[in-house]
Image (cartoon, rainbow, N blue to C red; front, side, top):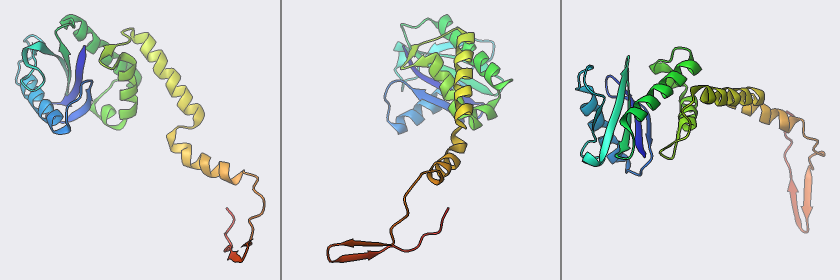
Amino acid sequence: MIKAILIFNNHGKPRLIRFYQYFAEDMQQQIIRETFHLVSKRDDNVCNFLEGGSLIGGSDYKLIYRHYATLYFVFCVDSSESELGILDLIQVFVETLDKCFENVCELDLIFHMDRVHYILQEVVMGGMVLETNMNEIVAQVEVQNRMEKSEGGLSAAPARAVSAVKNMNLPEIPRNINIGDINIKVPSLSPF
């Protein structure tokens, strides 16, 4: 089972963090630091598997990573996962990001975090691998993009809300409200 997925740059700045096992926030930060130090000091021509750090479970867990340009993609898995299978999964994830963002770079992970998380959820959910077929993942992402465009996206939500309120057929707003002995005068409101 996948316990955590960490993506950070060459300087150790986290770009995507997903834990599938609960850790307190300060512990998560320590795990990220320790993982970065373990992975970043390794030479590029050595094996991409290593034992998990002391914080995340020691020898029962493995860190499987790939270094692409300025980013490290690190999957922390337990002993039941295949190292080569996870390396292939990292490759599928990176290639899917590359297809969806047309030459993915670190800035895409920063400015399109919602899309990156959606793509990751198509690949892994709850620590279990859902899909490894890149074409299927890209197809689902395209369906999601079409749905967002048809709805106008999140940026159009305030304008749609104002438009909906303007188009509501409300009766004239009462100017005086009388309830028994209580008389309430409603101030004049400007029209939309």
